[in-house]
Image (cartoon, rainbow, N blue to C red):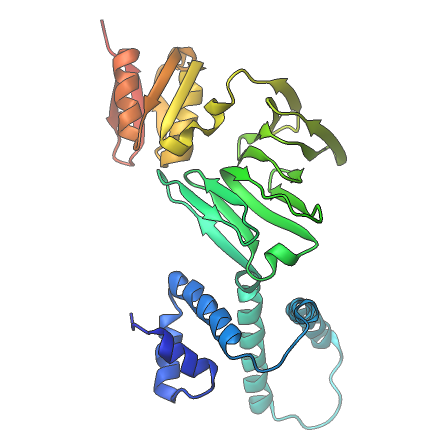
Length: 337
């Protein structure tokens, strides 16, 4: 892949690049990391070489309105296709070329809309990442998790919104104007805070919110009805896939953020639950050939940076053996007596 530097990009933003350089930039932008660097340098360029003095609020609203118009244009295009043809001669070849170019541009803009508006932070299996948002809030992402936030104007937006899939700890910075901070998930659950410290778990098997400091309001939906619960420090709310919510006090909050230091804390935890944690954090598929093993219990604190670390511990504690199938699935079984 072609390597580019800031100088070439600044020349490009100023409109002074050659056709060859433009081609190089297009190839360079095929990589996601380069796209992030592109937006970073574009913002730096605009700060260094302002073309006009603008009202940032008006500019942002105008930008988002143009993005939203892409959807409207696509709807209008669909309506045009349904209208009857008029009786006049049409150059179908030229019209077809123009339509294809317009459709290609519109589709590309639509596909890039989310990337233009939002910045994605993502962790791989077995990886954790600490992120400082533009407003000074700090988010620590657990493995196999994604956080999405506004690329521009996050700290100035009426509501600071982020979207989470996976697991994360939030240390939200309080703003003098009491600006709200909302964590939204795809599990019909959202957490609204002012200044506080909490963790959110939002995966396919359910959602959890654990409050460490401050105050949060949790909104969730069941049977098309919206419910609201105010949480106090030391409380946990769990929402399963059926929409059933449970609010309870927890003895040791640190259990729910132990993953930050690659620790797994089990307190009479079933083997089935441990297997789910391994799959979510390390991307390893595990099966048990004897269902009676699923309810075996484990208590203790263990450090594991990869799946094999935990599997070795389970093998020792529960007298298990495991083997890997040709499809990569690990099968656990009891060691014969």
